[in-house]
Length: 420
Image (cartoon, rainbow, N blue to C red; front, top):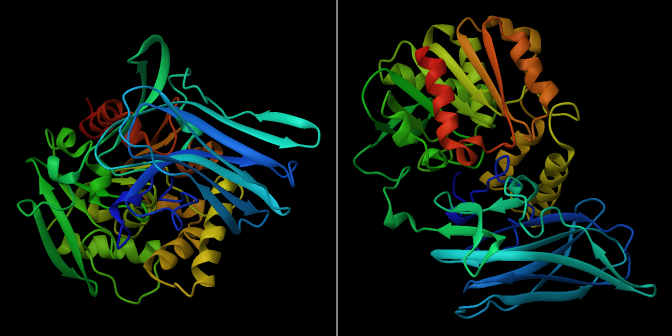
């Protein structure tokens, strides 16, 4: 994703996790954003149970404009071998409108969680606030949670090891040094000086070239779970976008047109005339523009969770609310760094006229999740506007199909590219 700590390469569209700015760098975690505008001046208690060490619960308050007010954090548990409760209590500020309630974990290992609970207490007594899938009994229900975790971490709902009739959330956290490191592989990696920056890319497998383009504030490592699967059939060329991962950046304003031109120049550098392109999220936006501007370079295109423009009709409102909140925090701290530049791009780009998609001459696979942050009518508009397109909406998935359903995703993409 860039110069950000690897722990916080977020899962949601591009790391829009609300507490990114505040949480300690060595932690990763998950949780819910809750509307508490009707609970002013009441105290709260948030709790969960855990069968894990190095775990803490956190609550953060925001006002109606998304401005951070304060947070409450408890001390991490030591090593435990039974289900133990974790809780944190505080009082809502008068202007609090939203609470983030969540759990953070640190280090490698297997972490288990259950029974997320939030209650409010005031003059009329105590009231429980509903948290979706708080007991993890809906085994398909992780899309209701916000996650920020290392790319290697895997979150799944499993059977409670101490109670076979119960389901719990399991997070398996691994350090990059313990596995093959996609995005930092000296054997597979190379640099190309193109378009005023130094782009980093890695190559795996043999066969016809397939270029992978990742999302905002991500890196090559976001494809770690599917690169080995794709490399069975293709020569995979995974690219770090300028300023992300190991690629350098200059001071040029970030736009998807710029990203697309970077890829075009990289393909020229590699003497590749016609390639398959797979773009996820922002990488999908880049892929669309590359196919529009340089149709001779793109043999086939597959995109996941792309958008033509950012407004109420295309992107979930909470995404832009969170972006604006994060930008305000960065600006208040005079921290106009690369993260700020990327989030400005996310908020204000792209600017693609649906009619202009008629310039795309290659066969195109348009994909999104049923619960994607990109609204389904917008995804359907993209598919409808491309002359030779196929539309796939993955059921019970969100913006993270690459991570949520890797085998089905690879089967779908490979089948499209090979016609099998």
